[in-house]
Image (cartoon, rainbow, N blue to C red; front, side, top):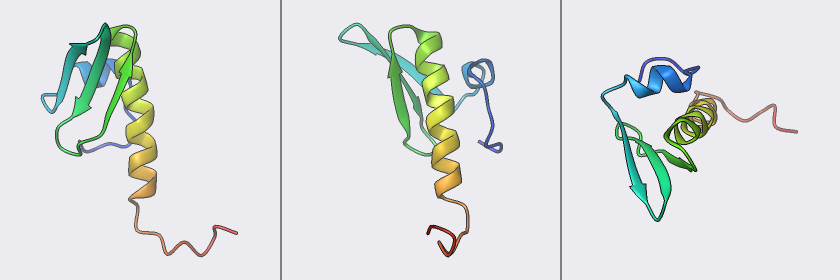
Length: 69
């Protein structure tokens, strides 16, 4: 994954994204980061994964934490 801001359509075409169904929920996982999310539909799972990946990438940016107060 090279970009932080991706949408569900982008993720659907990404080879590092897998979608499985478990207990009637769609599970979308980015195999490069190990980040996953779920939804009632494949589209919802991908949308949730896109939002989760954005948060993941924000948290992994090189930041000293000096502005957290």
